[in-house]
Amino acid sequence: MSVIVSPTQIGDALEHYIGILPQSATVSGTPINGTGIDRVSGDAGAPYESCDLVAELGTPGGTATSRSVVYNLQHSATQGSGYANYIDPFTGLNPTVTLTNVNSIGRVKVNLKGALQYIRVVCTPTFTTETSEQIAAVLVLGGSALSPTP
Image 1: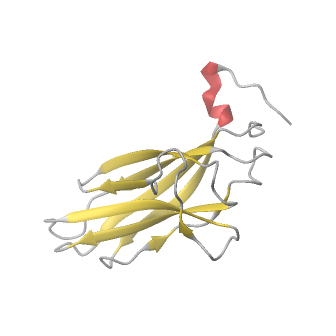
Image 2 (image 1 turned 90 degrees about the horizontal axis):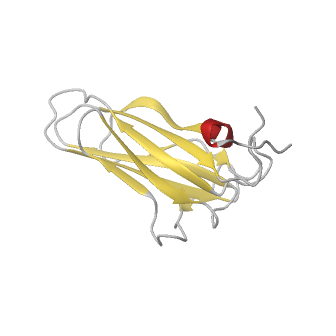
Protein backbone atom coordinates (compact mmCIF):
# COMPACT_ATOMS: atom_id res chain seq x y z
CA MET A 1 0.00 0.00 0.00
CA SER A 2 1.35 3.40 -0.97
CA VAL A 3 1.27 6.27 1.50
CA ILE A 4 1.48 9.91 0.41
CA VAL A 5 4.12 11.71 2.43
CA SER A 6 3.85 15.41 3.20
CA PRO A 7 6.96 17.59 3.69
CA THR A 8 6.02 17.92 7.36
CA GLN A 9 5.91 14.13 7.84
CA ILE A 10 9.20 13.04 6.28
CA GLY A 11 9.54 10.31 8.89
CA ASP A 12 6.76 8.41 7.15
CA ALA A 13 9.08 7.86 4.15
CA LEU A 14 12.05 6.60 6.19
CA GLU A 15 12.82 3.32 7.91
CA HIS A 16 15.45 3.01 10.65
CA TYR A 17 17.52 -0.12 11.26
CA ILE A 18 20.24 -0.92 13.77
CA GLY A 19 23.47 -1.21 11.82
CA ILE A 20 25.63 -2.20 14.80
CA LEU A 21 24.27 -2.59 18.30
CA PRO A 22 25.93 -0.35 20.91
CA GLN A 23 28.90 -2.27 22.28
CA SER A 24 32.49 -2.13 23.47
CA ALA A 25 35.04 -2.88 20.78
CA THR A 26 37.87 -4.50 22.72
CA VAL A 27 40.28 -5.69 20.00
CA SER A 28 42.01 -3.06 17.90
CA GLY A 29 42.00 -3.80 14.17
CA THR A 30 39.30 -6.51 14.32
CA PRO A 31 36.22 -5.74 12.19
CA ILE A 32 32.77 -5.94 13.81
CA ASN A 33 30.06 -6.99 11.37
CA GLY A 34 26.55 -5.64 11.68
CA THR A 35 23.42 -7.63 10.90
CA GLY A 36 22.30 -7.87 7.27
CA ILE A 37 19.30 -5.71 6.38
CA ASP A 38 16.98 -6.61 3.52
CA ARG A 39 16.73 -3.43 1.47
CA VAL A 40 14.54 -5.05 -1.22
CA SER A 41 11.77 -6.75 0.78
CA GLY A 42 11.67 -4.27 3.66
CA ASP A 43 8.66 -2.52 5.16
CA ALA A 44 8.08 -0.31 2.10
CA GLY A 45 7.28 -3.24 -0.20
CA ALA A 46 9.70 -1.89 -2.84
CA PRO A 47 13.51 -1.54 -2.80
CA TYR A 48 15.02 1.27 -0.78
CA GLU A 49 17.16 3.33 -3.16
CA SER A 50 19.15 5.37 -0.62
CA CYS A 51 20.29 5.44 2.98
CA ASP A 52 22.24 7.38 5.56
CA LEU A 53 24.87 5.48 7.52
CA VAL A 54 24.99 7.19 10.93
CA ALA A 55 27.93 6.18 13.14
CA GLU A 56 28.74 6.92 16.79
CA LEU A 57 31.92 6.78 18.86
CA GLY A 58 31.50 7.03 22.62
CA THR A 59 33.83 7.28 25.59
CA PRO A 60 36.85 4.95 25.50
CA GLY A 61 37.83 2.54 28.23
CA GLY A 62 41.21 3.55 29.63
CA THR A 63 43.31 6.57 28.76
CA ALA A 64 42.73 7.64 25.19
CA THR A 65 45.69 8.81 23.12
CA SER A 66 45.03 7.72 19.54
CA ARG A 67 42.01 6.22 17.82
CA SER A 68 40.42 5.85 14.41
CA VAL A 69 37.12 4.04 14.05
CA VAL A 70 36.03 3.34 10.47
CA TYR A 71 32.47 2.37 9.53
CA ASN A 72 31.69 1.22 6.00
CA LEU A 73 28.83 -0.35 4.04
CA GLN A 74 28.85 -3.82 2.49
CA HIS A 75 26.29 -5.70 0.40
CA SER A 76 25.44 -9.29 -0.54
CA ALA A 77 22.90 -11.32 -2.52
CA THR A 78 22.35 -13.57 0.53
CA GLN A 79 21.64 -12.75 4.16
CA GLY A 80 24.49 -14.52 5.96
CA SER A 81 27.49 -14.60 3.63
CA GLY A 82 29.22 -13.23 0.57
CA TYR A 83 29.42 -9.62 1.79
CA ALA A 84 31.77 -7.26 -0.05
CA ASN A 85 32.35 -3.53 0.11
CA TYR A 86 29.59 -1.65 -1.71
CA ILE A 87 30.65 0.95 -4.27
CA ASP A 88 28.20 3.85 -4.50
CA PRO A 89 27.48 4.45 -8.23
CA PHE A 90 27.13 8.20 -7.62
CA THR A 91 30.51 8.71 -5.90
CA GLY A 92 32.45 5.66 -7.11
CA LEU A 93 33.56 5.07 -3.50
CA ASN A 94 32.79 2.68 -0.65
CA PRO A 95 30.62 4.75 1.74
CA THR A 96 32.76 5.32 4.84
CA VAL A 97 32.57 7.28 8.08
CA THR A 98 35.81 7.74 10.06
CA LEU A 99 35.57 8.98 13.65
CA THR A 100 38.54 10.01 15.79
CA ASN A 101 37.01 12.22 18.50
CA VAL A 102 35.49 10.93 21.73
CA ASN A 103 31.68 11.20 21.91
CA SER A 104 31.27 12.02 18.23
CA ILE A 105 28.80 11.19 15.49
CA GLY A 106 29.22 11.10 11.72
CA ARG A 107 27.13 10.29 8.69
CA VAL A 108 27.45 9.51 5.01
CA LYS A 109 24.70 9.57 2.37
CA VAL A 110 24.53 6.48 0.15
CA ASN A 111 22.91 5.85 -3.24
CA LEU A 112 21.73 2.20 -3.12
CA LYS A 113 20.66 1.83 -6.78
CA GLY A 114 23.48 -0.66 -7.47
CA ALA A 115 23.30 -2.52 -4.15
CA LEU A 116 22.40 -6.18 -3.84
CA GLN A 117 19.47 -7.28 -1.64
CA TYR A 118 21.23 -7.23 1.76
CA ILE A 119 23.35 -4.45 3.23
CA ARG A 120 25.27 -4.21 6.49
CA VAL A 121 27.59 -1.91 8.40
CA VAL A 122 31.12 -3.01 9.30
CA CYS A 123 33.12 -1.18 11.97
CA THR A 124 36.90 -1.45 12.29
CA PRO A 125 38.28 0.22 15.42
CA THR A 126 41.97 1.04 15.71
CA PHE A 127 43.30 2.30 19.04
CA THR A 128 46.56 2.24 20.98
CA THR A 129 46.33 2.77 24.74
CA GLU A 130 42.59 2.36 25.33
CA THR A 131 41.18 -0.95 26.48
CA SER A 132 38.00 -0.50 24.43
CA GLU A 133 35.95 1.89 22.27
CA GLN A 134 32.17 2.36 22.56
CA ILE A 135 30.63 2.03 19.09
CA ALA A 136 27.20 1.95 17.42
CA ALA A 137 25.64 2.58 14.00
CA VAL A 138 22.20 3.11 12.49
CA LEU A 139 21.03 2.89 8.88
CA VAL A 140 18.20 5.19 7.81
CA LEU A 141 16.70 3.85 4.57
CA GLY A 142 14.47 5.79 2.19
CA GLY A 143 13.85 6.54 -1.45
CA SER A 144 11.49 3.63 -2.06
CA ALA A 145 8.80 3.93 -4.73
CA LEU A 146 6.41 3.10 -1.87
CA SER A 147 6.48 4.45 1.68
CA PRO A 148 6.60 2.09 4.65
CA THR A 149 3.15 1.41 6.02
CA PRO A 150 2.65 3.00 9.44
